[in-house]
Amino acid sequence: MTAEIVVLPTQQAVAEALADRTAAALRAALEQKNRVTLCLTGGSTPVPAYRRLAEAEAIEWDRVHVFWGDERCVPPDHDESNYAMAARTLLGPAGVPETNVHKMPGACPQAEGAAVYEQALEQFFGDDLWFDVLHLGMGDDGHTASLFPGTDALSVTDRRVTPGLAPPSAAVRERLTLTFPTLQRAGLCLMAVAGAAKRDAFSDVLDAYDGEAEGPPAARVRVEGDLIWLVDHDLAQGLADENDD
Ligand code: 6PG
Image (tube, rainbow, N blue to C red):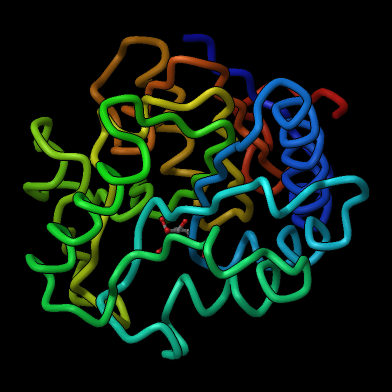
């Protein structure tokens, strides 16, 4: 796997690149396959990207199936729900058919929710789980999806979905998250990260890439396809070569 780092001037440019690269990848996949899969992330960074993606040209959303990399253990209409954010910004505006939306069961008790989504992935993919496009973000502690530093979820390799636990500072601590082996099954992983508050975590990621340390969970993501970091200048200033997108 190679990890490419694209440094963009602003957080808005990161959102535009996330949307535009996703649209291009979905269109390319739709030319090759009858149905394609998109795995969304949560948080605030993707919000403008998802609004832009909803307006993208020539995406046959009736052939795109949507999944999530993680979810907070709250009902789907809760302010903290990753599904609710996507429904508001992308799924509704783009007209993604309900039958194509495979949300994580955040309203279930955590262990039950993990088992339910495990079953849902099994039912849809069988043994051949594959995300044509995977979105991930990173927190200022270096977590990605809901794989938080120092938690049991980091070492789960025999399941596709597992309970995650956010730190006490998080609005919602109990989470559901895909595991590292599951995230690996992606053709294109776009990691959209912006803001100076995450600079230390991003520096730790770069050190991990240089083999100097294990690094935070975000540094441990490996995919079978391409992994591209879309970062803004505030995050990468002085850390990574600037280049144009
Ligand atoms: C979540 C996300 C999480 C997110 C990071 C960054 O459920 O919160 O999946 O991994 O990507 O926490 O969030 P921001 O984009 O809000 O900084």
